[in-house]
Length: 112
Image 1 (cartoon, rainbow, N blue to C red):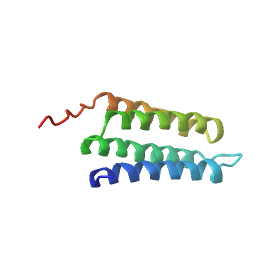
Image 2: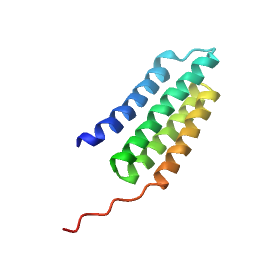
Image 3: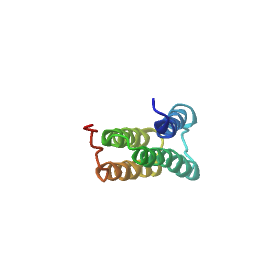
């Protein structure tokens, strides 16, 4: 992996690891609203930061489309198991990440 992709990769993986932790270990019968809000903002924010870092590093457009798809799946599973508020935040982050991907310019291959 090139050095310029370390930040996008680590922030993306950090978001997924935090989401997995909450999904499997922190869920309770009575979710706390502030915890849902913080969870959605942290996970969605990390993956959006990853999308911006990938764009800035000149990564492929598909990387951010993939991030958006992962956020969509995470949002749907979050709605099912964690709560509505966190799911809405993750789904909004998925849309925002998709907009970042659609706004990216493709790198042209070097013809030299």
